[in-house]
Image (cartoon, rainbow, N blue to C red; front, side, top):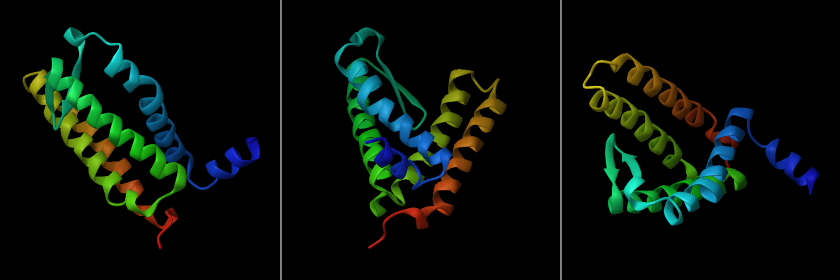
Length: 137
């Protein structure tokens, strides 16, 4: 079993394994808790930089559950269908971080939003540059 895990992790760079690990955590630990246990009054989700509360946040969490589950499976199996979707989702996160940071701080900390957005844009570029690692038919 450990040999198979080691072989699977060898398929991708360490930073891509970290993204896969994050997708695993979100799919199997955080989002089930967020959807089924977290009180509705405390629920918040961000999509495209807009913060949602309550039932809309629960619906957003279901979408996040699907996205992270697909991300984990696609990275685990190195599926070709993950492109361009993973890059587009990460760019959406970059955009969301920029917009959300601007809206949450009324523009006073725009530099932090730009910094975080740049990090995610760089990550999306990394996936684009490594698309040859994926199982293309």
